[in-house]
Length: 223
Figure (cartoon, rainbow, N blue to C red):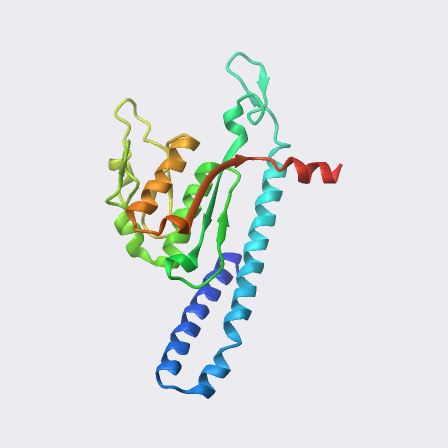
């Protein structure tokens, strides 16, 4: 079965091949070859936009469904709505990556999962998918307050000295690397910005912002 992630990866691989072939044909001054390849970039760009659109729709549906989850149980026996009782839980992270300004093929990409930790993990995964394993290896040398941002030994690097439980972390696909997610939304935003500066990305290639979890305008349209 072909997955959405598999389709994205295949499109990116094809795009890289097309750009490489275009460069080779241009160097050879093969006008016929360039002409045959020229229609492909716009088609691939349109496919990438469609995939991004599907991801955005899925994220919005997940956010809406999450609002119908059963209220959490408090220690005193009373119930509370985890999304309404704490204003901080009404915010999430939105990351806009401009791949073209990083020297890569493709339109700007928006990453905005329902949970800030999920957005952070997807950001690291997309860096790996587009830029390769070397970007994770470099981020493994970038340290934050609780340790390296990325590691291959989370049980050691993310050990919490104040207790038996380690700091929260998540696996980055099947790379063998893990990312530290034990931080507030504001801290995550600062960490992502600092990490991108550490990687040497142009300042205008990345936008990280805090947004509301719910797009109330879209909810009202359904009422």
